[in-house]
Length: 406
Ligand SMILES: [Zn+2]
Image (cartoon, rainbow, N blue to C red):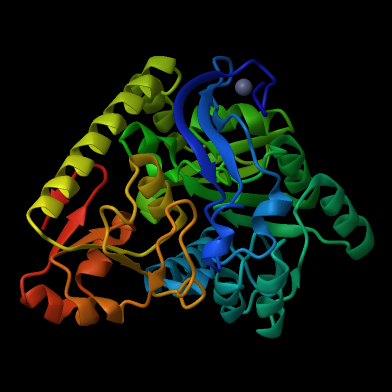
């Protein structure tokens, strides 16, 4: 497989085996046998340093009835509000501006811009979710963002944006060169494109559970500079954010339009120093994740032997990848809960655990809760619903970036 940004041949450094699509929860036991699985492995491009999945599943298979609704997490909604306030001020957006969000989901982020009086437009391919957004009054086009769609929007609707925003989308689009070409097409001459995505540093720090098929790219700044330059866009500022256990936000303009901030130069130097341009850095991560796998499985085996009961808290994509790669299923876990109603009553992909609502914890009183959304561990540990369970001796297991029992 060749690099999707620069077409150089990739070098594989991590393989997770055969993994099903993580958003396709199963409705009934009869579906288990026909569940499709796909090879999941990650490669490194020695020329432009872009880390990426080797084999992908077609986006049409993945996103049409996507279960994730972004407004579920309180933490996420707060982050949307902060983003809108911060970007409106930094980019001087007002009622004459247009904010275009790519992969706008149910409109949670755009709603925050709208409340500031700024006109908005969303694009999201999941028809059921785009419908929710449209019903809320956030105009949303239910298609995949691409260069042809961008051209069509420009020619037919004269769409030109002051801000093109995308959280968690840049990493998901296999046709990435066409995607950024589309961004360039719709950006006003002095407009800014802002993308936020899990930073590759997380991978290097053992946060391997961001690896799944939908997540094609694991960007470093050095790899992105190369990609944007190929369509004559330029990254002029960067900012770290706490999303997804460590994300990077980049600000791009048409080349040569805006002065390049010191932040860009500094982060670039830091990345070179950390070896983000070297294959060995990623190979080391792969070994250290394997060590965590053995440690966690040993811990769960020991608890089982002692007659302890362990449940898992929440079934996000990242949680499912952890269960699958570590081989943790019903042999180790008594049950799993998730507060998303859309997942309750369904079976987790690959591991086939029936998802219960969180109330199951106070009913069943397990001894341990394995927090699969470990990036939101603080939020989970402070939850009112778990207070009683906790006071009666319940303990949390946080698996990543190192195993902790609290
Ligand atoms: Zn490349």
